[in-house]
Image (cartoon, rainbow, N blue to C red; front, side, top):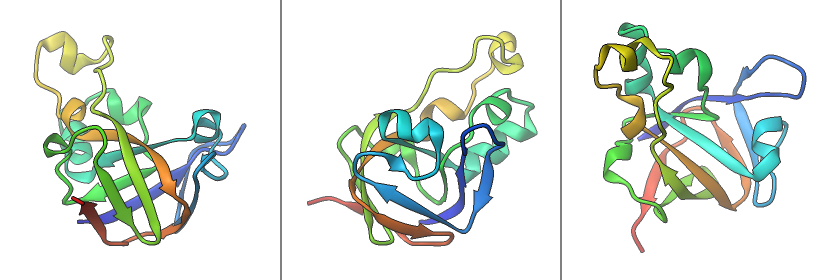
Length: 140
């Protein structure tokens, strides 16, 4: 399990893909105006992101995660799970998200992969994470 892509949304600027993110216990992702509002960090499975693009889901146009992961199965995780990424630790505060009602997938009554394949977390140990950093689940 690894980080696949890292992004942040600077204030009054388009979301940008970056090589590293600085995470803070209070502010979440430094330089991301959405994260700095409440300190949350968003995560999304690369596999689900690709699947949703293939079936023309609205989520990929409206929902962009700070950390896109490779090989992490969010459907097996619960609130309170701790993830170690680089020097940082994140604690999951929410697993999954609701679909957008105006999405064509929802309107067609099809199953969207996004609700079970994303999460939100708070930073419990700050620091820097890089693209391709290893992700481990802390079961202690």
